[in-house]
Length: 98
Image (cartoon, rainbow, N blue to C red):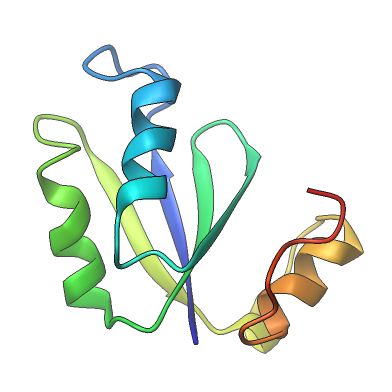
């Protein structure tokens, strides 16, 4: 299972958070997702980086975004421990507490 960081401009006016959430939920390339804060989603997928990028290009058309593959055990920051455990757990069904 691959883990990706999706970063985008939370102030973009060509989509709403509701539209983006709906798009992510319906995106067949996204297995699971978590949004720790505005402008960021952490995604799980079996797909490669190019396939993931392609799946979001149409939605973010006209707006900049970044999707990067995370090497979970080489990634740092301050998130709740449940989020780190979820990222490292392979096909864990849900993020605890969500």
